[in-house]
Length: 103
Image (cartoon, rainbow, N blue to C red; front, side, top):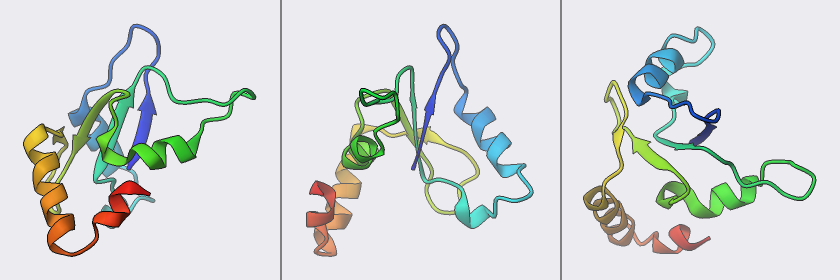
């Protein structure tokens, strides 16, 4: 997962972001993110550092901003819809890994 903070009044097109990431010569296709959160504000501590632990805790269920994702082999990001979340939770339950969703 990656989290991207937009500048005030600006937006990021998920298709453009995917194209940008795919065109990076030092980023193998295996390392392309599955989940992307695009937000106007990242969680920060009192010193101004990004609170990565907050982002980890939210995972792909973030309500901080728009969440996009791609399934393995897809060539673009799509919105992470409630049905996608249900499918993902069901897959975790089927594999006995539900505890990982609540870390």
